[in-house]
Image (cartoon, rainbow, N blue to C red):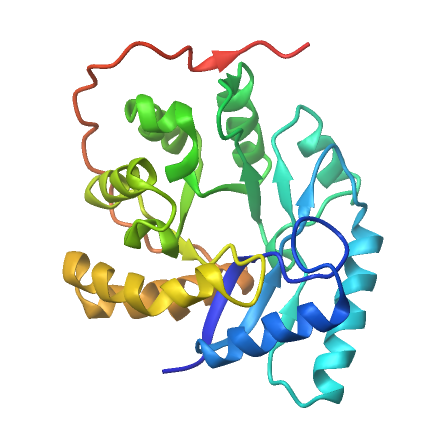
Length: 263
């Protein structure tokens, strides 16, 4: 199988916690091709506007030129993984932020282990009102969502959709992310999947195993949709044909403060 599209990938060199050198980026690109991918949206971490889009685009051009020179058939598209902060909408409207391949879809990273900022739902609602769609990457690793699964539905009702990591389905990311990922799938709010690859091994090696497990849960036709059809709609800036979300599960744990105030 081939022609897969990855919407979340740290493949650019010397820009975040992905590859350190251009050569390592090339190795990762070759591994992506061998795993069946033909298109990758590059999504380096962006915190409070840094690095700026010009830096990301220049690094993308450099890597694409090297891949073309080596005849590695992988197309790179621009993007970013924006860590949540109050000025994201302002930056986007000022062309100081990158969406996925220039589409309405925006990767909006939530904190892993801290409570969510108090403005989280409002920001997602405001992004939606301005025509953007907040895509929450790796929700299965966000402690606030692990503890209170009702919050998953609240953010979705505000306009967010969810992008799970393939490796979460195999247990590679730990038992709690795996359990949360399965809940998200069962609740019918697993909208996209991605590798979130940071190097040329690790999570990429989990894709085949993870897609087999997802096929057992949802059927093989849905797997192809997650590998090609839905990500193609995203990069073409088309709406996703999503089924209605299921009902939230009853929540027992109340040991976590889900929102924090910004300072």
